[in-house]
Image (tube, rainbow, N blue to C red):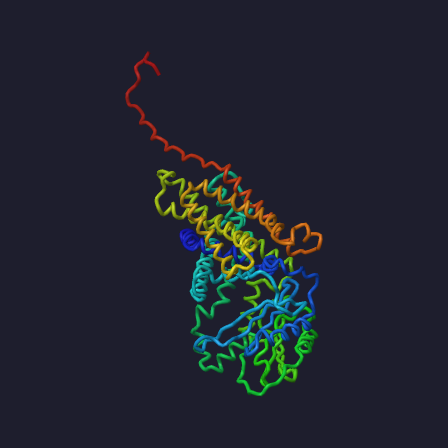
Length: 525
């Protein structure tokens, strides 16, 4: 069990660390997206969803003319823009989509910088990047399965798991790393087990599709399955008869009366302008322990309510609960912070496990200054995967502030900058002595995190002091968190500088055999 725990954690540990860290920050992906669009004004209160939906639907008559399907994501307490996408004729018959971001007050497209926002971290968490989406999800599932095995085998291996939680011996080298790893593991053990298992379950249909393939063989049956899992209604056949859309705000107000004023998430419109138009108004996730779809379906031309869907089958509801537990969208701000902190502890758990592998084996090397290639490679990958990723993710945010606003494919360049800096961190780790590389990269991460709010103050009109005075909790909270993370990296850099590995104890000589010859009297002792 010990060997299983060690090797399942090491072989995919670098992927797991990246998945944990990007997944951790994704609990505040909406707030990160707001910070990365500083041109959009602070939202003092959530606007009326009915009014916003009508404004944006009117604007999409021009911006998405001829599209058979519109989708309007409404603002909420964490999101101050309207995110839309619409279907367009694809190349060679394939479906294609375009997207847009609208101002909820004016109903027009926002004039803000092009950015991927916090959505990039969320997508990277389970799809990685620069690879086909399905490949990325398969790799994420493979790593999550290893993580599940590592958790179970770790519980079996640590017999004194609860005693070890209250034991920490600082300055003891390998012992200190082991104590830290044990404490971080036990602290969030239920959460780590839940988040790993639910992550696997949410993509179970991808990893094991044979059950649904056997149960749903016809197109109609597969469409029924999709209807159970999603609030998106596939467009029907157009009649060719032109008909104006009924007022969208009236439909949204009916949904607000049912679910609450600020608990309407999305409006989907199929075949707008045709007599066969349909409108679905979906419920938000806040306050629900399941993300299973709940929606109201309306006739798009008359506004008549056709169907109200408040529940799904047992299997779909189970999936919805698993998905909600993994995403944590059901909770308030305090719950998201709890998710963030325990997930950050999980990130540290993976990181300390990776470092402990090298610390434990370094003491056994014949010559620690000339390690064998496998040890050297793991040590360098640890530096780049842990300290280097902090630098790279911060570089992504720096790019948002410093890249020219009119740069073509600006959002792509933000992501490219992250990977360029991450690659340079790996190169630096390979060229420098291990301890110096750790110290230098931790200090670089400290400086990058600490200076980012300063750079933001000079490149935008939203400096920290102005955000504090305006009561803008999103901007102020994110920049104060950056300083807290900078302090954490500085602490790690200082501790690494002060650490001096204990020399390997010399092997004791074998005791001399007892002499069988008596020492002559008078001779020296």
